[in-house]
Image 1 (cartoon, helix red, strand yellow):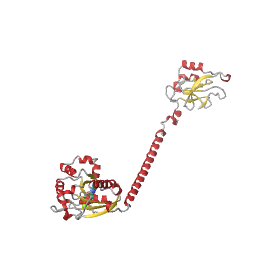
Image 2 (tube, rainbow, N blue to C red):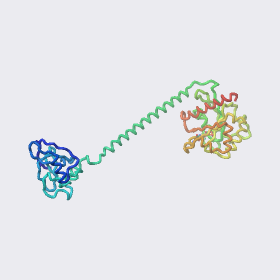
Image 3 (cartoon, protein in one colour):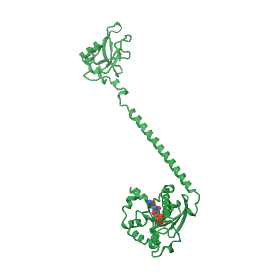
Image 4 (cartoon, helix red, strand yellow):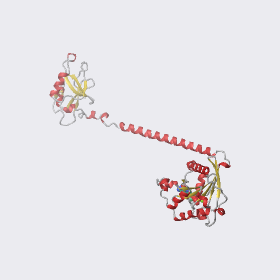
Length: 362
Ligand SMILES: Nc1nc2c(ncn2[C@@H]2O[C@H](COP(=O)(O)OP(=O)(O)O)[C@@H](O)[C@H]2O)c(=O)[nH]1
Ligand SMILES: [Mg+2]
C-alpha cells in the first residue's frame, strides 16, 4: 500500500456508510449533502473503502490521481492510499481521479472482492467456533448428566442394600409369625429355585436334568420381613409315584400356602395330565390355599408380554385351575438375586397373610 493523499490535520468528519454512490448523479447528490469546507481547505467528497476492506467511508480529501488497475482507499489516518484491484476486467483500465471512483464499482464493492488480502481476513470465513463451542458444551452436559445418574443409581442401590440388610437382621419372630410354604410342580419347573428366592439363600439344589435334581423333600427356613418362613421343597411330579397319596410321600407339613410352580415357557399335554393328578397325590383340598407361581418372568420381559396378556392365552384346563386357585397367580424371575426379588417375596407373604386372615381355620 502506498500513501498518495494526506489529510491527517484536517478537521473533517468521516462516516461509515453501507453503500457508496455508484453513478455520477447519486455521487453528485452526496457531494451536495456532504460539506467539505474543512479548515478552509477546498477538499473533495469521497466515498471509499477503508484500507482494511471492512467498511465503506464517506469523507473529504484532496482528489488524487489513481493509476490504472488500482482503487483508492482511506488509510488509518483517513489519508488516501490505493490498493490494487485484482479482480477482473471491471477494474479501472486507465488512470483516474480518486473522486471519480464511482466509475469503477469493483472498487466500492460491498463484498470487497477487489482485495484478496482483505478478503482473507478471518471474519469472512465461516466461524467454526460457533459449531465447536456448543458441541463442547453439549458433550460436557451429557457427561455431567451421566455422572449424576450413575451417582444417583449407586445411592439407590446402597439404600436398597441397607433396607435389605435391616430386613435380614430383624429379630426372629415367634411361632405366630411363622409362614409355612409347600412347593410342588413338574420336574425342572423352577421349584427349588423359587424356594431359594423366597428364603433368599441357596438352600435347595437346582439345575437342569430330565430326571430331576430333587428326589427327596427338603425343608429350609429363613427370617424375612420379621416372619419365620419355612419352605418344603418337593421332587417334581415325575418323581412322585402316582397312585401313592401325599401322606406317604411328603412329611406331615401343615402348610399355610401351597405354591404350584410352573415354567411359563413349557405348557404341554403332559403338564395337563400331571395337573389332573395333583388332587389325587396331594389331597382334594390342595387348591384351597394354592398360588400358581410362574417362573421365568425374564422370558416374558424379553418378549415384552405382561402377565395379564400371558394369562389371556391360557388353555381351558389352565383357566379352570386359575378358578380353583381363586385367581392367585404370581410370576417370578429366579435369576434375580437378593434384594432384587424383595418385592415378589414381600407381596407373596402379604397375600398369604391376608388369605390366612380370611380363612382362620385352615
Ligand atoms: N431363566 C430362568 N431360569 C430359571 C428360573 N427359575 C429356574 N430356572 C432354571 O430352571 C432350571 C430348573 O430349576 P430348578 O429349580 O432346579 O427346578 P426344579 O426341578 O423344579 O426344582 C435351573 O437351571 C434354573 O436355573 C427363572 O425364573 N428364569
Ligand atoms: Mg428341585
